[in-house]
Length: 74
Image 1 (tube, rainbow, N blue to C red):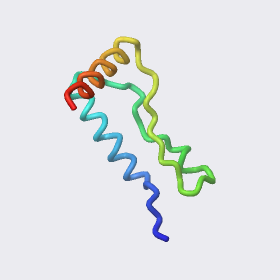
Image 2 (image 1 turned 90 degrees about the vertical axis):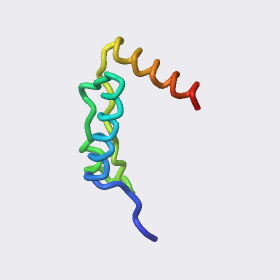
Image 3 (image 1 turned 120 degrees about the vertical axis):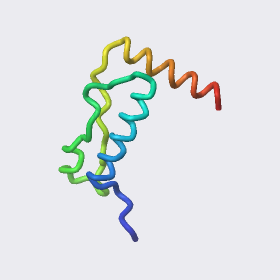
């Protein structure tokens, strides 16, 4: 059975893509990064998590507004 778990490189590309998409809307998540400990665990397959947290309320509200607008347009 093929292993479809994300590599650290895959998750890094995902983080860069998300950072660029958020920047298009003037949103910056200061701690947006690859969660490296998720690759060190004994999970099978490796989790390959993205850390999103630690933004202020203005940023959280801006992100919520962009998501609501996108949902309404689809």
